[in-house]
Length: 362
Ligand SMILES: *Cc1c(COP(=O)(O)O)cnc(C)c1O
Image (cartoon, rainbow, N blue to C red):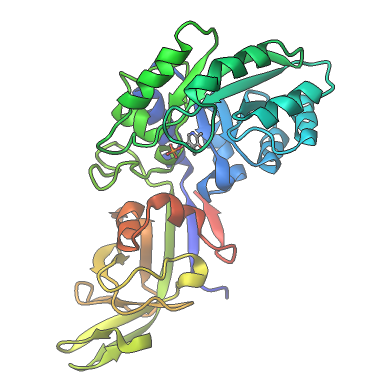
């Protein structure tokens, strides 16, 4: 018997969330962002529910090859563009569209031998200060690209730093619009948070939702996934492999981090940090046992956690434990709540599920 830990990918939820993105950005085409192996879900597993997207956006060329191998003939966008000259050969061969964010990438294009001009997305650094041409240098980059026989259509792109928070997008939007006002080409500017929170001001030809497709709220805890009508696309579940009754004063686990104040029944669940469950979770992190909400107590071990069974008196060896996602009784534990307990975000938990965890699709 394998350990009872399991990640389940919910294809109906993925399709629902894609539809939700479409509703938020009515006139726009939708890139399904599937970088990082579809935020840990597996590109092959999300492909069918995301077939209804207008394109796939990612950044690892090996992942682009996988999308083409699945039979996708529509647009594929490399969000960081190419890393070395021979990547452009792959772009030609597989018809990949690619981001151009720096001069080195234009140099590579200028030296690239191809019969087929390529479609590029010229990226502006409008204030995120990670990738892209500064507003001052953007038009020169556009002019240089426009003169290259290797380049077909030039689209325009930028990325927001604060679409999920108080600062918002207006300051970056103003820069982007001022510099690109009279340039031709399609635009793509909105990630999940901008798509949900700033739909009216970030209207463009394409949106680039990632996290919302996977049922996590980009602006948790201000809003949760239910607020945005998103459904969890991943459940991490396991079972109890022991039930212990503790006397008052007994401690639990490494470092004796938790002391029972009175008699306490705890369960030991088969999941630990070697499965990708964050070790930063501590006493109080929410967990479902038999679909009933309770809390973790003590430290996360490599292969086990301990949970308070007080609200679940019927729990026994083999009872279902849901670390995040949907329990068999339909109860939902949002990944964002668990992430918050670990001082991180839903993105990181999804991406960090360990290779040793078996994955099912429903
Ligand atoms: C990852 C990424 C996105 C998607 O971001 P979410 O916050 O997951 O919606 C969009 N655009 C770019 C350039 C990205 O790298």
